[in-house]
Image (cartoon, rainbow, N blue to C red; front, side, top):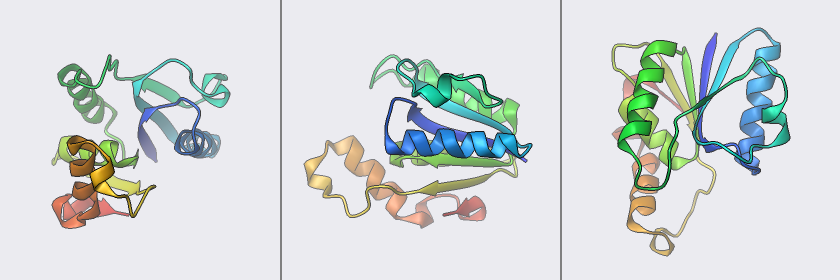
Length: 146
């Protein structure tokens, strides 16, 4: 199976560690695994070790640098043709759902880690992203697993 993980960065954190451990474990079992990341630098040690897991940087330079990184992600989705995309964190989940080519039989899997957020404590973009993923019918139902 070919699995593409998608996360903001691999800087130390719970989701980041979980991503790396899961990708590494699947690679050790013979699966083709890669991790697409918006930001590189400061990765956790596990991500820097020799590994069968490929890290695919999207080269995002800042919050408003979106067009280039999203185009690279779309290109990666088309060329990698993963069987499964596992998105970590709400923004990556929403972007994967929107950018995943419909012609691919790829399944999108995600987990919401921060359920019950108080949206009024975050900026408008973050609040909108959380609302988007909390309503699964907005995601592509035909390829939706959670």
